[in-house]
Length: 308
Image (cartoon, rainbow, N blue to C red; front, side, top):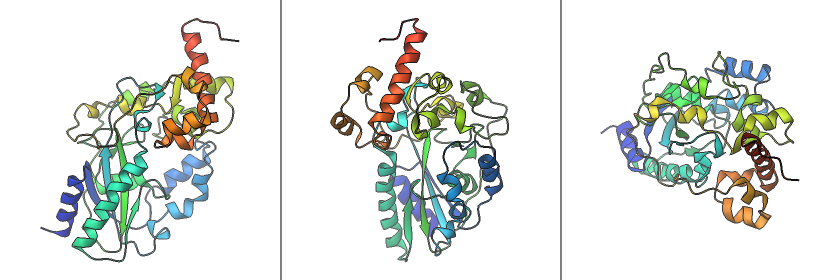
């Protein structure tokens, strides 16, 4: 068994959908990234342009890196996307779940090949995760900009290990979207552009998760009844129905509170309910901002007057 085969076997035992390898080196999508930023599609996410130098080459993050091990894991598909809380955010924070398993994989790799660098990453540093996953062969780029896996569908999360030794690169997968446009058609705000870029200014996930200000009437209208995230463009993907890999244990969704219940929450209630989820980074005030907008939109859909 080669080292690559042994790493794949260990990763599969830990519940990962796929594990692939790509050399550490210059990004191949910086021109597209720059176009996205210059067009204003990043909205208020200024931290993305500030980290451009690091994003441009993984070796700017860790100079000893020679290869990057990219893993993916499946999370449950939302059967009713577009309202409430995204399925990925309803359970434990996926960063924690993935890091726990990546650290176990790192320990297993060190046992196979003692080395000076086995560094886990889960969206914590400005690696171009989707580019790396596509180059490594985890999946292909869907029209909604997300990675689609042939064995896990569009509902996947990514993680990486930077290592200081060379691994045989795996082979990319050609796009298998064909002429399907379901993800584009599912977006109620037309945030997915013909170019394949996503205009965050119109994206429900951006507005409910990243945007820090008060909603304008147009923004409030766009989020509908969403409280955190959206799921529409990933949940509608036909490849979810073809998925053969089970969802990663620890990413199971839990029941969520209603907008009215959120508005009644104290800070202690918020911490108790959301401390182990990714929603904790949003904070109670912004979650209640979202809940007010969702409740307003829900009442208008039902032709009910707003409460005073």
